[in-house]
Length: 210
Image (cartoon, rainbow, N blue to C red):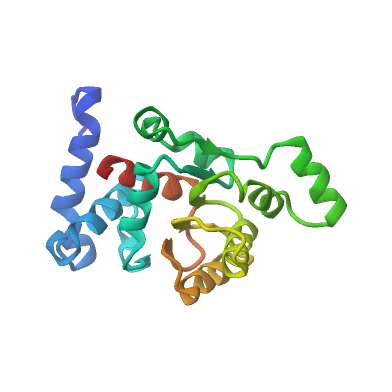
């Protein structure tokens, strides 16, 4: 049956349904989770309609605190693709002064990528690494996530948090396994699933908390 519901109440009702159905769908209860981690998971489920992501989402112990610190300090957020950037709320800039940066479409990025034989995603991430980036949000390209990990490990890039949820069949799962193994402050979804809506949902959940 189609519900007659006001537009401003849709999100609230969606979250209520998620909590109501959570145990039946997952075998776990919201209270089994850290409250902030559940708030992020709830927003991911809301963005995807997929309760099974409960089993594959992973939080580094410092991830949420580091992400909130970056937001409150006005550090910028780097999005690997425009869909991630477009999905992130304006609060980062309006309340804290940070910017959402996405350079994958820049002509200079394309030129350098052609010259080096590398992907635009990894080239764009490297070129943005000096832009006071506090959070990296990767929802599409494993190459961007691999570049972020490599730059951090080389000591040339210092984001507070990596939201690493690239999607696909080539290096997506492997890049996320590497992210977890590296022990960096990160939030990820293991396996091949991921995508821009998940990356944006995680960031928006953090913005709600900040």
